[in-house]
Image 1 (cartoon, rainbow, N blue to C red):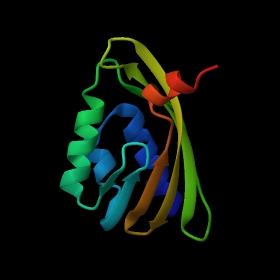
Image 2 (image 1 turned 90 degrees about the vertical axis):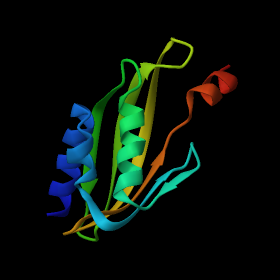
Image 3 (image 1 turned 180 degrees about the vertical axis):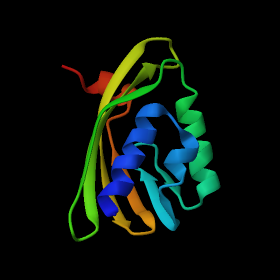
Image 4 (image 1 turned 45 degrees about the horizontal axis):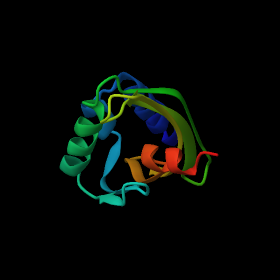
Length: 123
């Protein structure tokens, strides 16, 4: 059941389906976006987060892969792409670390290097 939550959430992410994605989080959860320094603990906050993200021009999530072990912990990777505020295209690889139980995702922490830092650290 735990892997099924993550696989279905991954499918919703690729389809940019906010309602389906948010439905895979347990009633009590913590979502952390480390790059944006954002912590979310309610489904309404999470819905607004994804609605804002999915409204970006050209946004897409591809190459999404998730896995879960018997311990209720899992991970995933993804590629986030779209057009930045400056109109230039971007593509960012990221990773998610999950805690999940039969009620859904209880914790997700995402890691990625934001576009403004990527250009500053390029050789």
